Image (cartoon, rainbow, N blue to C red; front, top):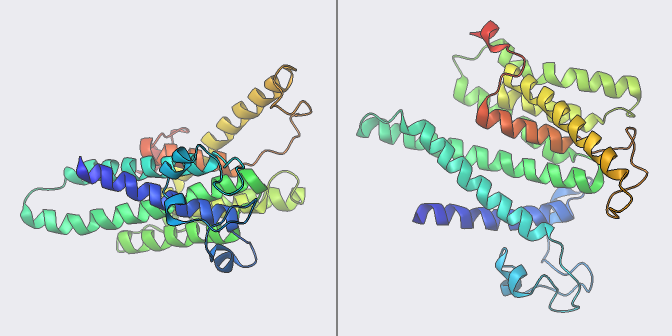
Length: 281
């Protein structure tokens, strides 16, 4: 119980930091853009420590800046809460997996290090997912720093944990999944798909493997198609003022959130949407 509360609170703190990254990330100076004290984007008032407590400060201040009274974006508590829940979900998910491998005290010690490494790795990866998702929704671009960090960490973790049992097909999974996206980007000159999606697919291949990575991409297209059709139908309802009435099948929709959602679903459930795993046993 106490460890769950601690992990959730840790996730809230990390989520607060991710909000800073999302809002300040600069493609040219990614590290420099994150530096500096937090302040109100409207009145520029420097925030005190008690105004930076994840979720609670938002609730206590009733979603408004103490200086100018301007409403604070709901992105802050939503991202903080989502990060806390994801951290807790990852911890419990990994603990259940490794719990079956604990046979005695010696294996407990050996597995504890592996469990901790896996949890920390996944916490970092899912934090990157959150940044990429929200940043792409806000700016319709995937930051290179996050895409390459995801790909680099996925490749490194795969090499370290599977060294000695590593198949070349798994090493090539990233480039294999990224190539179709890169080709579509090149042929369409960026009109059909962004090159950032190819960079994201590179990391997906190394993070999930070839079969699961392909399943995640297919699932992402399915979800994206359903979402696009749903938005088109909603755009026909004139009574809904928050929907763009000019939304059509050609309207630009950030695709990274769907790739991330597909990756997360396949990671937890391992759905083989094309039935290909039987060929790789």
